[in-house]
Image 1 (cartoon, one colour):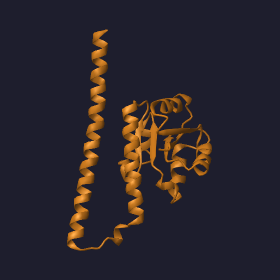
Image 2 (cartoon, one colour; image 1 turned 180 degrees about the vertical axis):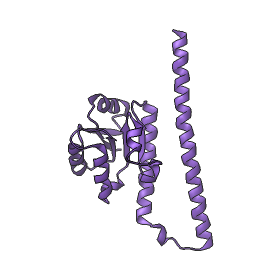
Image 3 (cartoon, rainbow, N blue to C red; image 1 turned 30 degrees about the vertical axis):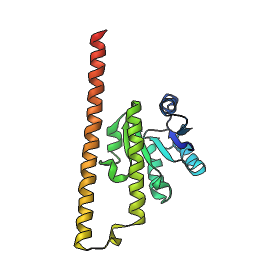
Image 4 (tube, helix red, strand yellow; image 1 turned 180 degrees about the horizontal axis):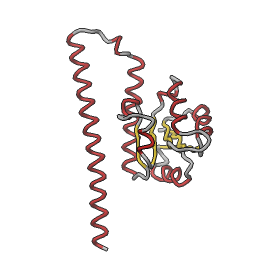
Length: 186
């Protein structure tokens, strides 16, 4: 299987290297950009499978890159993970829930499990966006049976989102507990 190309747009070499080290090279090819302008150029040249975008970047902010991606129908379908160490700066420009914008937010610094979970979730959201672009809701027949099916799907998606949020919270709590135990054992 060919490696999936992930473009990491972050001004921190540490973060770019960390992502590269966390992902198995047999499955992922990590390419890098250190600022927003270079990142946009690489998106158009490299056609990455997924984009990891820092929110605070030199020359062109992550938010400006995000807006440029959203304005291009083809680029807006690329799975997107938005990264920042300060979530409040992201939410001041992009309202939650992020899933409604078909993107995943990951807070820096992050662990390998969080990164893998974010990659999987971003892929699912991008696939969902592709389906919604191909089949707009207005094209769905409005029979009672179809309407009930759509309602059930929406309920299941909401339940899935809730369970994923709980899982992330539990993973963080578990890690805190492990860290606490390690400190006590020293």
